Amino acid sequence: MTTIPREQPAADDPYWTFMRLFIRHEGALRCFVRTLLPSWDDVDEVMQNVSIAAWTKFGRFDPQTDFARWAATIARYEVLNYRRTKARDRLIFDEDLLLLLADECQEEFAQSEQERRALDGCLNKLPTRQRELVLRVYSAGQKIKPIAAEIGVSPNALYKTIGRLRLILLRCIENTLARAATEGDPQ
Image 1 (cartoon, rainbow, N blue to C red):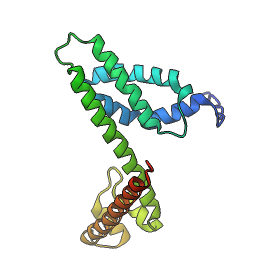
Image 2: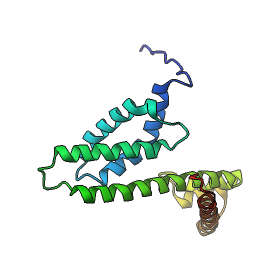
Image 3: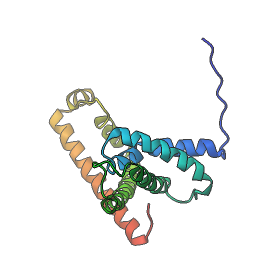
């Protein structure tokens, strides 16, 4: 089998920058678009248009701003364009309702991104052992009993420890978001 050597992209290569950002946020964008359209087939079609439009406009993107919010705005307009092409379909929402839903979804999209960033920051503030424990317990496919046995505690003790750590993380996230809101910093 022949391996194709991959070139390391330049740090300032706009193509790789765009791809990295778009791939990172594609799942959330897809969910956002899904809240505005009746089927996954529609979502797939609109997401193709979103990726093309975002790439076309990427030269105007300000790297100091939030890519996810910028791309969600493009997605919103692509949904509106798609809706206009399907105007005769009874399953498509009225445009006023669609705009209201899009506004609410964009606010939630931005809020969930702020919460994710706050969680990342708060996880990093935990001592290494506690952070690794939380990440391990919440990894896909993990069960409490085997983890508890491996670290030498009862499952009940592990549940209590995780409960305390969750409370610490929740308070940290709330404080981080409150501080960002009072400072006017979007995180």
